[in-house]
Length: 625
Figure 1 (cartoon, rainbow, N blue to C red):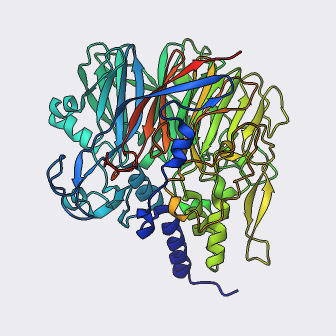
Figure 2: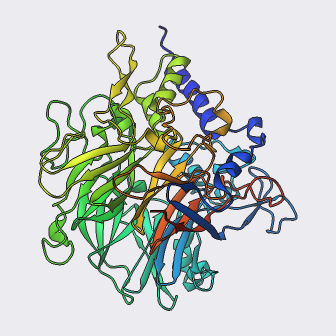
Figure 3: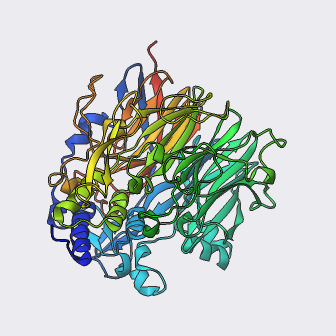
């Protein structure tokens, strides 16, 4: 077989990827049947399964904030827009926290463009009926030549409070802009308010800054007064806070996008000194989400820096100090996505301190499940929660991240090889449950060693893995055991397009799992590509036979002894909401911060819903025993 020149292989791959991922061109303007969603969501009332019916109520929504004419054209004044069309840049409720009767939240603008630019190195402007990514041709990028084209769609994020008693929203971004030139400069350089937490009357909102630092902003939770901001040069990303035994902790990453390593920080601040932290964990990968489980903190991580050289054959870094890894194969990289367990919170007095920094143990990692080592290194882990005596967590997959890395490590020899790589590297989320923290044993698969055990709830017993030595050295994809049998269903809760386990929370005795469904992003190309291999047959165990719908899927475990039930699979009333990004709890009520980057969907008179973030209240209505 004639080996294509690398440039030819790359251009074929780029064409396949660009077509699949960006869905640009005439097809993008094709109308989308609104009936998919209408048939499944019953308006804003959520789904009805088994005993519980869920009521969802839209509390607040992003409004248009810019006028758009065309790629590379300066933005006319407005809205209202006398020229061009309204555009809504604020896409995610990224950080969300509740203090008494008030929700505090921060947004993120155009994160789909930033992810495509940063993670997939795409800078080719694209526009369709749903969204535009201008990259280096945006007015902002043209006016700021030092701004990399990959982040040309950056807009400053916004801060809001929502009063749950008065049902009113107040924007507080002006407090940051007006406080000082430094505060305004920090706001303008903040990619988004990715993290939000509160403790001892202080609300902290923050996120990555352009470059490789983070910015944090503080408010007095009682009076609403703005307390100031700080730039932290030593950290590159922050996603979540958690309260454990009366102390607040945050997970951070170091370096660009947090890709070098990770820390857990204990907040030691106050209203008079809101930016004081003490590192209590030093991890080889960035800390993502955190939860308290059986007297310890457990953390999920994202993989290390995106250097494709480190994905290839050859030496990999030795594993972090865990003595329970397999020794009959190459060592597991320390910075692969995993679940990490803290020492007992009570071991050195109340809460963790600097003596606990090196006392963390990796209790599970994705190579225990994913049989393809290159794909495994592109997994992230996301939402994590303690429920019913078990620790639950799920996986995260940036669309085509695994494909781009695989094509770089093992460039195919022809277009069919490219298509095989595209098809065999797609993954939908796996949902796992473990029992940890009792003994020192570490179980692989479902065998139980010591007291520790891991079950796969939704996932695959086999996944495609690439053997570069097979087929006379040309490389072959083969279905390969994961070592697990899923207890309840296929990957993605039986939906092959669920790619992020974004957040898990427990409310009213139920475990909610918020996910991202990227089918709407990929809709124009689903006819051309065969479904990914994770698209297993429908389980058909209930009246759940409708077609998969566009929009975020929210699932709930109503008991640790039964499979999950669908609350909604079509964006909770707006199928352009492709993800449940953030969730906070108030008794049995859950507040959902939605992700919706469809920045050109701003026409209230057409038959398509609107783009931009949404804040939704979800309550269980009644229960049949």
